[in-house]
Structures are given as C-alpha cells and as structure tokens.
Length: 281
Image (cartoon, rainbow, N blue to C red):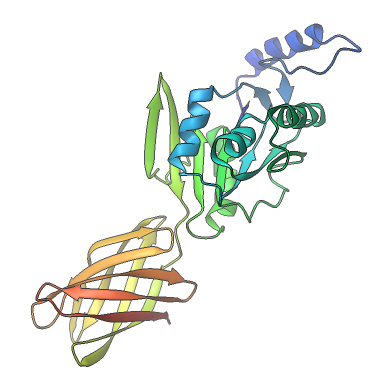
C-alpha cells in the first residue's frame, strides 16, 4: 500500500500545497509524494519492502491479492509480474486509480492485475487469499473485524503498522522499515464434543477452547478430571494440540477446522495411531 494515513495535520497541510503547484493543467497526471487523499497523504512503498511483503505471504500464481490503498499500483503489479498472482488494487483517488491502471498496462500485467477506484471500507475483498496494506494503526483496527471474518488461512501483510493487540505471526525489518504478517485464524472458541478412535477402541470427551486471535488453550474432560491441553496451536484452519490420557499416554492430535467441525489424525507416544473429530456444541 502506498497511502500513508497521518495524524500530523501541519505536515499534511504543508505537503498538500506542493503537488497542487507542481501539477500543471493539461499535463498527464503524475502523483506527488505527500499529496492529499481521503484521510491520507501518499507515500510510496520501497520496492524491496513490496517484494518482502509478498514473500512473507508466500504469494503464488494460485493467489488473489488485494491491496487496500493501492496508490500507484505497485503492490498489485508486483504480485502479478513477480509471482503470477491475480491481483486488485483499491484506490480512492480517481486520478491515482487511472494512473495506477496505466502503470499496470505499461508493465504488461492487465490480464492479471487491475486497479479499481473505490473506498476500502466499502469494497468487497472477501475473496482475497492475500491482503496487503499501508495504513495507520487506527485504520488497521477499523478493518480488523472485516479481516478476521475472512476465510481462515487468508494471509495479511501490513507495511509499518500493527493490528493493535492482534500479535503478528512474523515481523520482518528492512533498512529501518517493518512489515507485519498475520494468518486469519479459524474460530474454535467454546465447547466441542471430541471423538477419538484407534487401536480398536473409541471414546467421546468434552473439549473446550479459549481463544484470542491465533492463540488458543483449552481443557479436556477425562472423567472427573479437566485435563489441560499441551502445545495447542492454531494457524488458519490447521489445528494441533496434545493431552495425556487416563492411561498416562500422551496423544498428539492434528487436523483441520471447517466451520463447526474439525477432524484429523493422532498418534500416542506408545505408537498407537488413529483418527479424531470434534463437533461444536
């Protein structure tokens, strides 16, 4: 993203005057660093940061990348040109959006990349597999509920700014700049009925998760005992956790979450293997 939201009004006022004087009537539109937008001034993201952001998200030709606040289209263009991904940049300024689309044409990627004029808080980007942005924390926070409601496993990268108390899964630093990466987690909060089968036997237990973004912990009912889960991890739709059963064997479970159901396989430390599933109560 290239539209940097700034709270410093005096700086914005100073920078707004510069592009107004520089842009002459009749000239082809050229954006100026510091020009005003909707709650923004424009500051381009360096190429090396753009590439690292896309590599953090492990973008491939199978992805659909949406850049919120596209500016000159740099990120959407790089996603298509360097990684073969489909991409869309959402830019509020109509002239900037046209300029960015021309940049996509010059780069020869219009079959995969497009820049649309729109408001990032109104535009539907729910089909994206990767979301990129360069926004101040207050705007990241405003977008956060919409992002968390996206498909589990969606990758999100922000240049310079965080998501408040949603901790990043990775932080990369480049010449004083930072990029933050998250994976949208599945929702596993609450009570589940866990069924485990293997070694010729099966059993049902009550499973409960507490969740704060991608951080999870929980308990499992073993008769009168509420056993704590060990090494509980959630990454997108992938979940893993362990517990020690009533026979002192540790069971390591891994699988995937799909709405109100999760399932996968397990292995105990004595070599027993089997399957498990859980249904939300």
